[in-house]
Amino acid sequence: MAESVVCDEPDKSKTALNVGRQVHNSVKRVFSPVPRLGLRGRDEEEEEEEDEEGVPAASYWAGLPAFWRWDSSPSHLLLLSYGLIRKPGTDTDSEMDSFARPAQISYRRWRNPELRCEVDFVAEGDESQGTENEICTVTSGSRESAPSCASDPHTEETFTVEDALDAVGFGPFQWKLALLTGLSWIGDAMEMMILSILGPQLHCEWRLPSYKMALLTSVVFVGMGISSPLWGNLSDKYGRKIGLVLCMCFTLYYGLLSAFAPMYGWLLVLRGLVGFGIGGAPQAVTLYSEFLPAKKRGTCIMLIAIFWSVGAVFEVLLALMIMPTLGWRWLLGLSTLPMALFIIFCYWLPESPRFDVSMGRCHKALVTLKSIAKQNGKALPRGKMVAYKQNNHGRIKDLFAPQYWKTTLLLWFIWFSNAFAYYGIVLLTTEMFQAGDSCGATQGAKIEPSCSLECKYLTSEDYKDLLWTTLAEFPGLVLALLAVEFIGRKKSMALCFFMFSLSILPLYACIGRTALTIFIFLARAFISGGYQIVFVYTPEVFPTEIRALAMGASSSMSKLGALITPFVAQMMLRTSVYLTLSVYCGCCVLAGIASLILPIETRGRGLQESSVDQEAGGQAGNTRSQEPRS
Image (cartoon, rainbow, N blue to C red; front, side, top):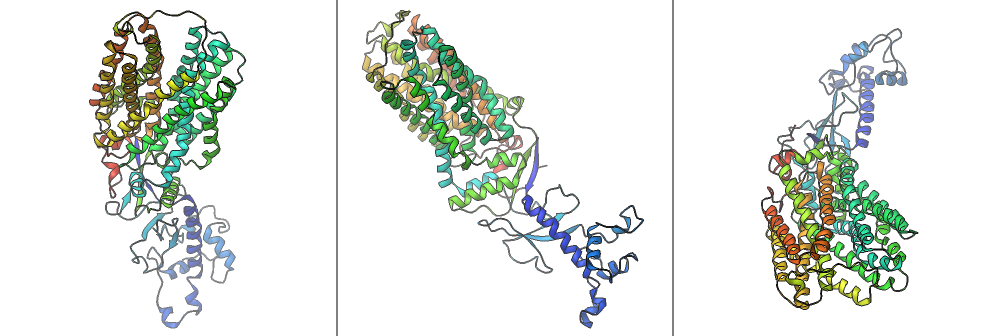
């Protein structure tokens, strides 16, 4: 349930206002009888002053109890005006009520976007000065109540967080944020890429059978699948920054311990815990997306995808340099370097202003937005920031609300299919190359399983082949980057899925090794592009209150696909190549259809702050002047 919140003055200003109001009223009442003492001109003595409520100042003096006279000490009068002392023998404040301080005073809030908000008391006759200033009224009924504007909300100028981010645009702040969140994405990619390098090395060094090597890979995906919704729930309740920093600390700690594992059992447990930490890495996309203007969000999120590809390539290059001389333990330790850098510089990482306003921390959100505006050299919109305070955060049942359930189920299948096909084509590359360029492997012949413990260390040629395969992701990113803003998110995902299936079809025929390499290269390029587009679409389609949970739950479904795909790409392939290719081709065709029937296209649409925005078709968050919803 979304509660309308008008983001007004910071807490410090409210405290200063209460103190200033007390002093203002006390001084006025204490010295209001001064004209009767002959301290003003005769003409002024004949004029009777009025306070803010229209009550003559002299009437205060006439109605005072006998124990409080104008000849009393100023300190005595000041204490009485604050209500800190009472008339002797009086247990109630009933006598003080007749001269209590006024309920309301006027003040001016300066609206210079380059400066912080100031509170300035308004003298009589000054309320009409200037168009940059806003005259507000603060009710003094409750110290805990937030200030609210006395002006008509139907006519006053307001803006939302989305409007503010559109106004400040994409600039130096977003570039720095991309680099910082990109470090976490590089670390994630390196920890995933190391799985394909660690297995052959341990197979030789520890004489591990093939099922133990497969288990070492699977346990990472199990940890990721379990933790992804948990990290998402934590990020929705306590903040995107907290969730991301904690998961990186968790991954760094157990990643370093993995380098000192004395035996297989310890390494299996520690890599599972590394997978548990990596499950929170998608929150980097959630955090980054909530700082982006609507027009460039799709293109900018692709920057994160580039960091993933950079991390995968960097891991292969690091292995090429480290493995022949220092070994796998050094590789595990050095692979945590990006996460260590992220933790060192995470003090600069701000919390999402969308999350802050959803939690009712309007002042903190305004401070963040002003900092972004200053760094980008832009100005925030004029007026009052209007937001929606969310009462519920991170509940899994909210993903199945009437307006979300169809999107949730379709996206879960799309995420599953992406990971199923992506990791499947990676495994198929090795398996089909082992069959050589004979036509038998691509015409349905069985590939005999190998149970031999004979080991083979990866050579420099193997690392170079792995590097070329990894570089296939960059063309996919270029395709996704061009398509995501021109034809939309839904059609772009569908295009990538259909083109992946089309690239798989030639593998049914009798083709040589060169042609096989080309079509596998294309298939990986298309599926990697589709994988990155779904990272763009998911945080855009869900509102702030469940965005991180939606990312975590969707990521968990992708890990389920990653868990299943080895049984298809390795075990089923040894039974029938045709059947294996048909499973991947059919799954991606269905995923392409699911992409097209998604209910919402998010291209050009602002991020939704609440389910109220979603029900209104996403129109509530994009206007500069609007009536706050109740």
